[in-house]
Length: 163
Image: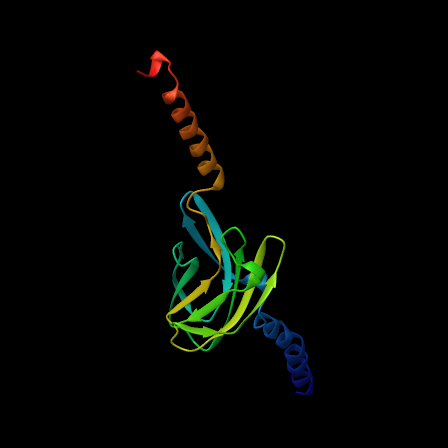
């Protein structure tokens, strides 16, 4: 009888910490959302006590929109690449259902990790920066400018090829 109690307590001592470790947040166990924008595919790691319905880039407002469902009072952790969304001096604005909320940011060399609290029943989170994926890269605009300048120069030249 004493042996069974000793065995039970021993198992409880060794097994309980294993279960406790699974409850601790670990970024390597975070979920991934795959965002497709133009010809790019971004894998966005996140952790939140809610269901993510969708994520989308809004180039006009320079923001990332996150649709949520079944959200609970929880911490939201999301890692975003600088090429996806960025802000000067890391001055982002984060809105939860249109209300500005406080956040912590941990910048890395190629991404930033945002941590903030969302209240229960939050349906939309918007992360606003000063720069999102550009619609037209600067190189293409430069090439078009050179092409148009060349056409104008050749069109004004007295060469019979263009007439």
